Image (cartoon, rainbow, N blue to C red; front, side, top):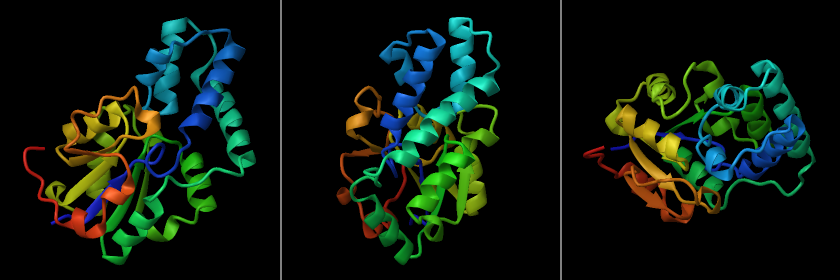
Length: 222
């Protein structure tokens, strides 16, 4: 029986990936670098810090990583605050409320910064539903390293065979697999370049899930 659901945030709870994309590529233009779409796709699921560490190495940038991160976050925050149409992904609020009503513990484990998580949870009033919020900025390594999910399961005080993870990126699903936790892959329109084959199952819409269906999952061969 599943007692804890661990959610990724960007691309799972909320569709902020286009805003991240715009912020990154606006910043790349300011830096005078051209990042191929194929390279950018490999960054999804990584923390901003780890992403800029790679960008700095690959493009020989002299700027400090902290400075690079702060500029990108300025661009992201501005668009996030000004975007009046931004909403949670279709069906996810209903699923969150359904799980909460059935006594399933919810934990967020996102590569996003604490500031971005706070922005999302405040704007969409999600705090009452989640027992713990885990940010990737607290870890040296990003997904596909499983550390963030191991920590989330520890905080939940739930055996891994009673947890599931919902993810949308190649790196996130690989991290779930490495953690030995059943993973549901969310195949959204923004995950077209993501490889979800390691997921235990794949959905295209959250109406495919319910608290009853999730609680009944029996992880095997994760």
